[in-house]
Length: 416
Image (cartoon, rainbow, N blue to C red; front, top):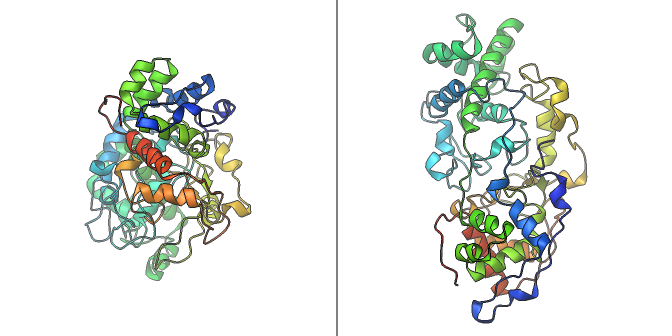
């Protein structure tokens, strides 16, 4: 399975207790890491990120020509109902492929925050609720969302015929004759769009679905190339794993090291933010307050239903995978109280640079985030997994300092 990138072995390392060498006197003392601490910290470095495996559901996932085609599609505003919205509208490359807004805005305003793309090729489920199981299936959803791209699958297919016929043919073979296919039709969307879809023949529907799926696969080939960049934490983690204390102390200040000790110890952040991408790829209810003015969001409880019903999932007719290759979907956890109000653990890679936080931008700053974990309030829906941490003001500051240091590229001299 892909869910735990590092595998269960590193979990056996356990969580190190906060060590006595972490006192705040003078800001000079730093943790005296144990062997288990060093191994755990080393496992969080991007140096341990395994080679990306091919996506069996997408036969062009690692084709450079598909990535170039997908890149063109990613920035093409013609794939929207008003000609003004592209994938890059909400997933801006200059903003870690997100938009910096509490709620993403396309043709309208969505009910959730745009997620960054880097490293998502390693994730078995996409979106905050995991309602899609591949990057290519994920790419299709916004196209037909009334508040995102606001278009539909026959319109997208016609755009491909008009503007990308050669790109398409070189990767996927001949395009079908769509001359008799309505300009706008889909099994989703408005009553008129659904009626137009219902009036199409089964063969036409299949042809359009095939083109639509292949567009998602090309976009995914481009998105698979987007990976997080090394930061100061990676230099520190590598130095700790190698026993190079001098290099470690040059990379991290004393307060940042104390924050890391909290991260893997007393604060228990590493329970969910583990592995080189600093996410367990799972779904958790952490009691995030409801966003004002939005309907109740039950998160994974609905997402798991949606991904199983998705015609473009790994087991669907448009997947290139064999059923036995769809292990995540076949063995999905589909029931349980813990799914209600649970949302995907975001990677902490780049997190300090992409406020606001949580699935609807409920927290404006990292200080707000760590304060929420410290207080562990009741969840507005379902039951929170958090328990109060009872961190002091100094400990909260150190934890925030560590979170900010993860992505900073500049090697600093030790000191507070």
